[in-house]
Amino acid sequence: MRKVAALVAVVTLSVGTLTACSGGDYCSELQNYAEAVKGLDIKDKAAVDKMRGEAKKLSKSAPDDLKDDWKTVLDYADKAKDANGDTAKLTDLAKKDGEKIAAASQAIAKQAKDTCKVNIEG
Image (cartoon, helix red, strand yellow):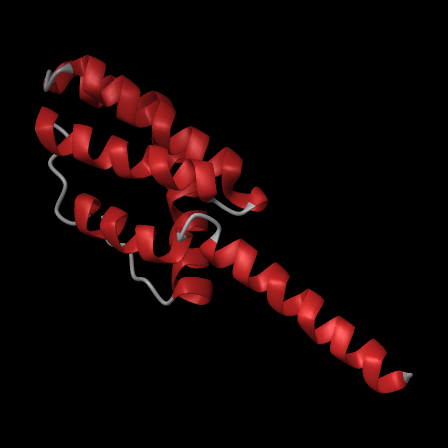
């Protein structure tokens, strides 16, 4: 009986880990996001669009504890896109949302490194 209980516990933990990391191939999709944000020029509308697309995919498959962080990233990306490369608007956005986006980005990057072994720069 103990062996069965131990096996059930291992399978349950394994499924939980796989779901947290690969729900919708979250970990492999993280690599695409990491490439999209590497050296991102927030004034480059096409680059911001690419980052937004990757972030949208990830927000759907992200672990529950990161859903709010991904929403913050998407909201920021939408506002950056709306700024359309205008330096004054982007500077204002950084002042208003800078701390919030930094905290969300750090949480996402930490989980990416710890769980998925993906380094996100930028």
